[in-house]
Figure (cartoon, rainbow, N blue to C red):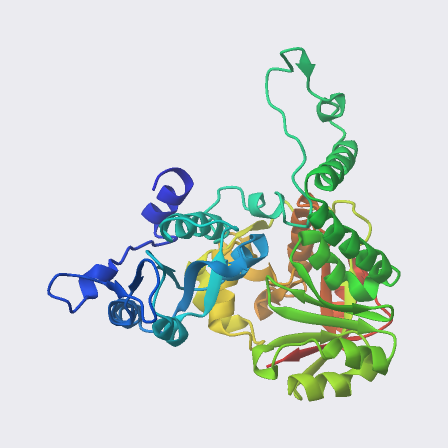
Length: 447
């Protein structure tokens, strides 16, 4: 592999290994296939060598991994699936040949049946390579531009807009004037218009999903302070519609695996909650109305502790002044022990390590000494804010959050955070920075 994936492999960001199933056959002629029971054309791969090859992989990595079987009978691969698979630590791709693989071993080891299209190839190697490429580029630190994977085709049900490079005129065709205007608002509006136009013409199936999501967005925007987490999930293209009715919506933020419910009545909430997966598959849930909480607790089987929060949103869109005497920079994994020592919220070491690895925690340094830090949670909210006791009341929290707000604005995001009710110092900080506070509460359920 070369280029982007090659560099990622060299850096150790990802690792790709090929396992030859033939190496695990017990047949003296190294056969891995035989005739099918019941007759029919073609040969079938046997269960024993496939299972032993899988078991060798599982033993090597020390756990049972997700096993993806490449088959025309599977669910058609798409960007949403790529994003889901990219969150896995390990993936095993099982590539069949001939007429396929003995059903018994598939039942034993396969977790996902996936196809790359409605056609048949001679084997599963090419589909596996396609999927590896699509998945690997979504792994943190694989792409140089951290926003590339979030601003391209399919990220929010829209195809990417047309792009142009030099020269300004080629074969009598010129670059659209708006792209040379320097007016970023006009450029963004033009790109959105072109994306909508292109999607409507080329992928009407995607356009229908875009229209549905836009309608949901407009409904939630009527109470934007309360619903900003849901709105930003839609903007980022990470929201999945689990259920919808005239009186409410249930979304999943696929990046953080957080389910989010908003409804106008208990009856509507109950109908939407009926579409949830099994309780043990739900780790994070946010309810936006208190009268839904008993239903949420019954469905998710998460009863305590429940975090009652208000939401603070920076709606002004104007950059905040930044302190010159405080150096703020992105922290890497070498700061894991420091962050874990001072951040008291029980999010777990693995979560903080992931936030550091993906460049989502920033530290404030005075004369080379780390005095505090702030971060962005997986679902997009600002948080993980700590200033060491000996450096408090020196404006460091304001400097950290101002810096983070500016970085989020540069990425086209709306900065927001959630504050546990009665945390007056945090509320005062948000108001000082110009964030608007929701009058209604939202409720976090964490398993």
